[in-house]
Length: 626
Image (tube, rainbow, N blue to C red; front, top):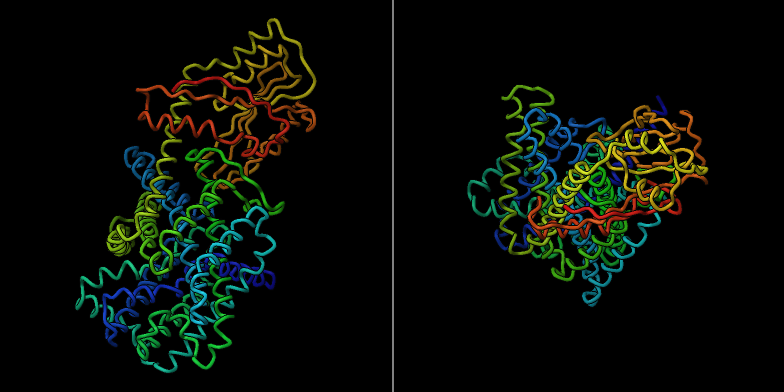
């Protein structure tokens, strides 16, 4: 019992540090953007109305939708949009047209996540450092350089892993939420009537009295719930109970106290709209308290950015294993935690996009115009996929499914529609990133299918080929050869090249096909399938889920028990690196065929993706026209 309680406490602290970093830093800029928009006057009724909308947005979207409903839709304990997509697509697999539509919607949602991965670190770190201007305006020219230096340091240290500093995330973020609550309580004590804003009639009165303005303000109010999707994505790391406990016991109360505290401050001093978060510090304490608060806020935003970076690496790895992105170099930064990975290409792509975003928008208020669109799109897509999960996977009655998701769908739709108005003001930037990644994902998936069809049409049956070869067998050399082939039962090009040029076969030969499945985890008992082909040759199929950590040498260990003597220093891995030649009039537009050919050419070797020893890989190629 004691160990269980200790584990729950540790997981809850970890959830506070990792899961809620993004939504926990929204207090830095959310109300500032709402009230500085110029759309509403600083009247008590308007302040009460906005705070009531904030309270009910957080309650309905985060507490009811994500914490109560969405966390129930786990796939073998895993969460996130890819897990939700897998659940939904498998639930409607007997309806191929619908399944194709859901796959497109889900993959688009995954693609636009990268847009969020650019805006979140930029706006969070900038908004934290902007607090220095309250200490002295002379630091203004140094705000952007300081933000870029901090972000560069964050991205640079990714290659070393986060295991060493990760243990501090929970305590620092817990301290951050404690400070949020204390700042809010200090202001609420001066105007306790601000708590009346929890009544929904203030929100309804504001919406009915100002329908157009309320609709426009949804684009800014969404900033109070950005990061809610993270608690579902990180469910596999912490579990449902710690995430729910962290939300209701620490995060939600702290956030709401701070928002209400900012509202109380604005009732007393409308000029505080320039930076209501930092100005909540009592005047007599600002001389010594502002700088530590800026440092703590910066640490919190860096932690929030780190959590998003970790999620980006994880999502990329899953997309690669599902066949929607080309293979990339994946570095493991921990010998104990398989989930701690580093993908250089994604790391520096995001950093370059963040530098561009900061250069274009210059401050957190301008960045807020670009923020929210991709987040609300992801929320809407999650709601749509949830309907198909509870209807077709859980087999719940249609009326109950509509009731459970209908309200969330309408709310998400209004948020998306409002944020679409920000396209011209900066929303185009993350959407453009999402469309770019979406195009890459669809092109790679389609190109791989065309390539597989072409190779299948030209394939030679492996068993028949071996029988023919051993009528007059070539010389055998010591050791084991592992031939990697995309299609089981077909002769790999690498084998043909080896026979043609070297005129030998190894003592043992494994023909290995790696299959990635739409399931998070595949256990060791189902990891490999072995079929003897005779002549000391075996067909081996290695199965991975999209959350498994590919390690081909480790997966092939059980082959030793089947009569194949594999020695690490005497095993050669043969990989056929096909050269793709695009042909006009094929299965894709000409520009997409050329794009796929270039991606295929630039894709990293399987040694990086399957954890093969790089010095054991022999690259042999052939031309394939698509």
